[in-house]
Length: 224
Image (cartoon, rainbow, N blue to C red):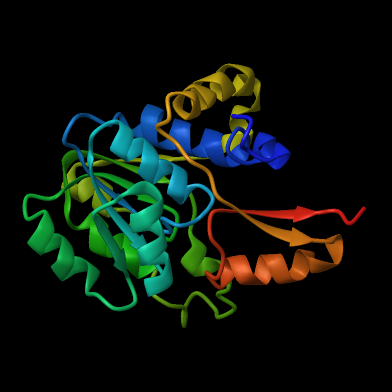
């Protein structure tokens, strides 16, 4: 733990770590051999969820937004199935790799991507809805907007969607933080932080994050 930056207290052991732990471990109940799909897998929450999936000996299928991120995630956590969603057909790929369907889906993207995974969820599967990045920059009206996630698929296909708000769990943080720290102490988790120096770079940090140009947790440090 001594190798982690002080800012890990608001990242790995803060909002990101708690969101990953509650969303994946508590809400999705991973089991040995569970088929797990994670998108935004190189992000602040995503790269932690991926490592938790591997710790619980699940079959991890991770999606990121660039070939550079594919190479990084494979190296950083020794993951086998990591793909650039921009250069593959997500649906066809899942049909090839896991023809029997998906047990767990940790979704931070929403939109068309979510639909492609949800139609392949097993009955009794679990989906954690952590975010909908695909909608964040959507300035069009709902009528003209891009494809929206059809969450009604859960009822029709018989799987469970569990929304997540780590901030709503603030009263539990004193109990949850040690559980996340334990995974790091066991060597099951690593943490990456992308730093920006100076609060004047806050806008650029946000732009880079929403454009998918960042790795791991984004942290902006005050210039001293």
